[in-house]
Image (cartoon, rainbow, N blue to C red; front, side):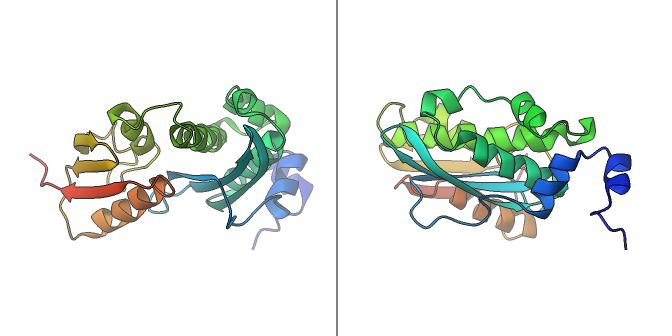
Length: 215
């Protein structure tokens, strides 16, 4: 078994010492029971996944924690991102890019840039949800599609929207109806159903998820 604590192995992989420290001793790991908002990006079925929890008071991010399923870079980028945003105002946190996360870690292998992108995407979606809850953004079709872009389709490894799996979205007040171009009853549909349900967590909507066989 490879000992990832040895610096020479980490360097051969392209991981910095700081990245490995965050992987081996992640900060802010674990769920938050009193989170103001949560977000879910990625998919366990496809590999990398991040669930982010934010406690926001008076537009200031007081606490941030995460749960991660994935590689060392996935854990490290999510961990360092939660440290970066703690204490920030919402509008300041919105300006964080994946390059900021990469630089904070002293570099990330290019093939792992998607991990930093996933971490920032989880942050942006959580902030979108916060602004919808605050009444600053509408709960509309565009917002729903934004959430669905954070979920990966297990059959293609693309997000549900890019994969063409979202056939229809209807929003009527707090009722959200989503029709997906997937066969119901299979393992992929089960995973997607669970992920979509988690994405809408805390929004107090009536979520109706329909499955329609692909044409």
